[in-house]
Each structure stands twice: as C-alpha cells, then as structure tokens.
Length: 147
Length: 132
Image 1 (tube, rainbow over the protein chains, first blue to last red):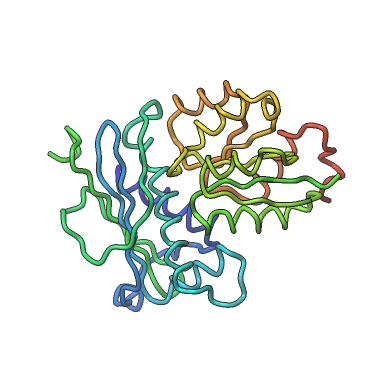
Image 2: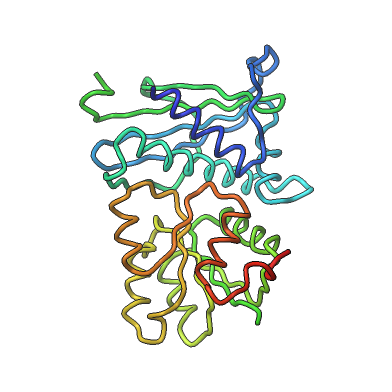
C-alpha cells in the first residue's frame, strides 16, 4: 500500500516536472548505477518523519536540465536544488495518502544528506533512463506504521 | 495588456520552473517579479502594480497564508488575483485558502494546468485567443 502510493507519487512527479518516464523494469546497469546525490525533506504533523530521494547513474544533471528547460547542464548547486524540489513535491503528495486529506503537515526545506540512519517504513526504486531513483520513507512516530 | 506577475517561492528552482512555464504559456507577459518569502513579496507589492501573484505556502520568514491575509487586509491589494502553487495536500488548509478568494494549483503541474488556471483566475482574458 505505502509502496504503491510512493511509486505513484514519484512517477507522476518525475514525469510532470522532470519529463522522465519510468522504465517498465529495472535492469542490471540501473541496479548497479553509482549514487550521485541524496536529499531529504522532513515533515511534522500528526506524525513526523522524512522522505529521502537518492538518484543514481547520471540522472541528476538530466533531471535538472529538464526541469529548468536548459540545453546545457545547470550548475551543481541548481542540480541539488532541483532534486530537493522533486523530494518536496513527492513528500507533499504522499502525506495525504498516509494521513488522510484533513491533516495538516509542516514540510521542511530539502537538505542534502550523506547517510541513512533509521530503517525506512517503505522503500521503492524507479528506473529512469540508464539510472534509477530510490525513495525511502521514514516515519518516527506513527502508531500503526512504525509498529 | 501585458501582465505583471509576482512569483513567490522560497525555492529558486521552482521560481525558475514557474517563470519558464509562464514564458511558454503565450500569455501576454509584462514584468515578472520574484520573491523568496511573503515578507519580500509584500515589500515588492507596495507601490507597484501587480496583475497576478503566484504564491507558495510553506516558506520561511513569512509563509504564503500569512502573506495572503496581509494582502487581503490592505485595501490597495485586497482584490489582487492570487494563485497558490503548492504541494499542500490538506483539504482543511485548501478550504481555508479558497475562502480567501485564491485559486489553487497542486504541484506537480503541467504548463497547460498553469495556463488555464491563470486564465480562469483573471477571468477577463479570452481563453480562445490568449494562446493559440
């Protein structure tokens, strides 16, 4: 359930903001792709947690260029900001699926991260071009999901 | 008449995406102003003619909802057309915003969504002739 909603939110966002369509399957090259960047957005409301988005295999510059409509590769700082915005939008879309549409959440500014600490409650991979995006959802205080 | 549009979002990338989309929309654009939060936006609006504000909700310093409240309280900006562009998924907050006479665009959005939402909000524009 959570994985399905996360996948739907992720593919919609990558398609509409990044003009990247998910590949039907994830091949070996995509699975072995090197991690380029990780970004997380934290949320607080009826429960708290964070969404981490990790891109691999040359996706980051393509994603940023597509989002900004640039033919040339944008500066690395803009590439990170673009990934942060992707994470922010996916997070905003997944929260009502978990909590219902009446609940209010505060979503923080995205930040770059280098490591993963807690075990995620949901994790998915999306094949995009020759690379992939990994999405990990962490929830620290939810009566059902963290059991 | 060209439209002066104020884009308010704390993400510079999102402002760039919105402005890129506006330029693709074939709407008659005048000056496009950018602000990174509600406070900056209020300072820009003061004494300047703006036809439309595109506003994010979650921003530091002053969020979009407080900014909208301030605009509505000021007789000079009380009727400014406003479109909220946000990831906000809470129906509670959306209903609160709609009562303040704002339109709502959910991220992610397509250029077509943005274009038609602007046309609908501005009302007086001829949807048949504004872009095709």
